[in-house]
Length: 165
Image (cartoon, rainbow, N blue to C red; front, top):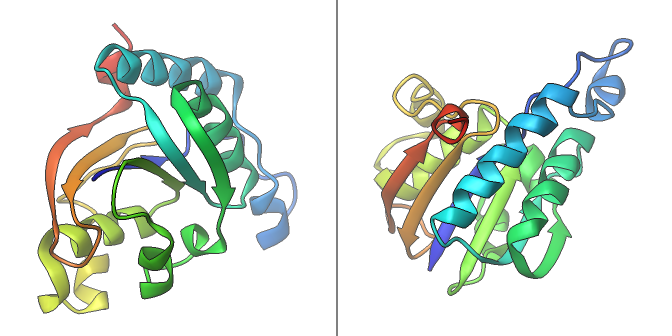
């Protein structure tokens, strides 16, 4: 199976304080424009998705909506993409097909490290790998293998600017 870890596109700053204000942040117009180029770039690489799993936060939902241009299946919302990686999240990922997970940092980087390197790293060590796997807003990590700790290989780490040409 192929897995695409997608960090939400550039969002507007929160209006107000607190978690609820952060959860309601929409994408910035520039974020929408730039992420449309990411989608076109993925399409030119032959990417077609069977499933999109997305965080319930507005900026992730809006990113998933743009990514749906590549979708031949359904989109599902999961709270597990707005939290640290867990066995519960892994249980939601099918074992075949092409699946995109739309979420947030630092959780996507932690998930990436866990899927690539496995359980020999503790959760706190996985959280320290953000600098090694830089997933910019609107960026995509493309993996292949079995979605379990240590079961995947990295095919590409695509910052959004590679698609802005």
